Amino acid sequence: MIDHFGINAAHWDETTGFYDTVLAVLGHRRLMDYGVAIGYGTEVPAFWVSTFEGIGPNRENHFAFTAPDAATVRAFFDAAVATGAEVLHEPRLWPEYHPGYYGAFVRDPEGNNVEAVCHTAAEGD
Image (tube, rainbow, N blue to C red; front, top):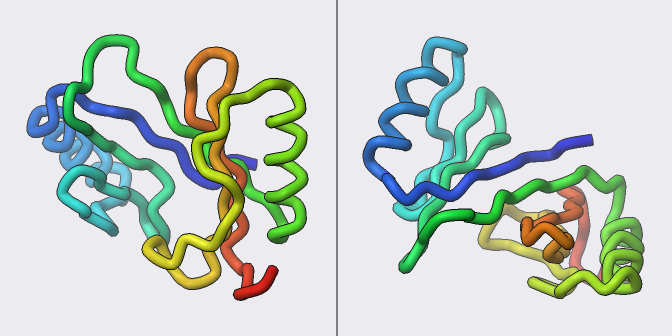
């Protein structure tokens, strides 16, 4: 069900140091580091810590739900938009994440960034 999730950090060095330490005890490590976003996991990044300019209190969370294919990602997106959800990113391939990453992002009524993702999409899906 949950593909990955992320939190936003106002105290970058302290927060990433904390997760570097405590997740290592559990057998996890940094798998991706973009400077403003770090993906932790064992084989694939499943937990992310991010930051951005002007971050303040009541920061949004990010949750990604697994979808079996690109068509289901699009159906998720259409259903979310039909409920009135704010569109963050329409369904598309995200090759900067990895080949085959197809996702759509919306904001839920509580202000969270919610995504549906398929990891096996092809160009033209």
